[in-house]
Image 1 (cartoon, rainbow, N blue to C red):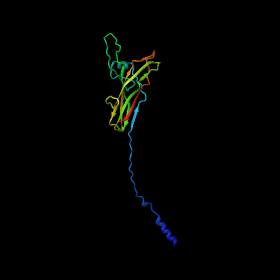
Image 2: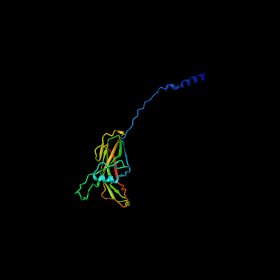
Image 3: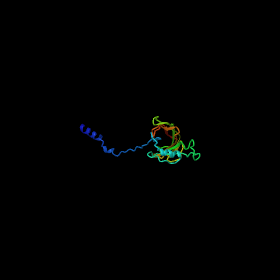
Image 4: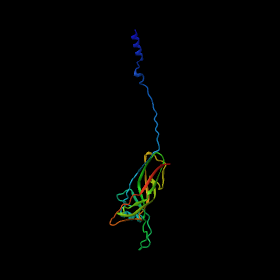
Length: 200
C-alpha cells in the first residue's frame, strides 16, 4: 500500500517539457553611436615636373602637364618684361602656386572642418646634387571642389559611407634652389604639410 501511494506522488511531480515550449521573449537592442571622423592622407609626395613644366609655370601657363605625376598642377602669374632687348631682374614668377588634387579624404558622421598648415616649410637639398632650398608658404585647402580657404567646413557629412575629397595648394619659392654640376636633377625634401580634421 505504501509503495502504490509513493508511485502516484512521483508521477504527479513529473513535468512534461511541452508545457514551456510556447514561451517567447523579445529584447530591444540599442546602439550608442559616437561621433567619428576618418582621415585618409598621403604620408609622402614627390612632385616631378619636367624642365619644360617649370619653365612654362614660371612663364604663367595654367595648367601645366606634369608627365608621370598626375596629381600636380603648377600655376604662376606672368612677370613684367622691361624692353625688347633687356633682361629684367625678375623676368618670371619664382613663386609657383602648386595644386595637389586628392591630397586627402575624409569620412565622418558629424559636421567637421579641415585645417591645413605647413609645419616645416623648407624643402632642403642634399648638398650633393643640389644646393639651397625651396620654401613652401600660403597653404589653402578645399573640399569636394568647393572654394579655397583655410580652414574649410563640411556641415553635411552624409555619414561614414560618403567620401569627401580634399585638395591643397601652396606657393613654392624656387629663388634659393640650384643644381650642382654636372647633375641635371636634384630632389629637395623633408617639408611637411599637416592636415587636421575636427568637429564643430
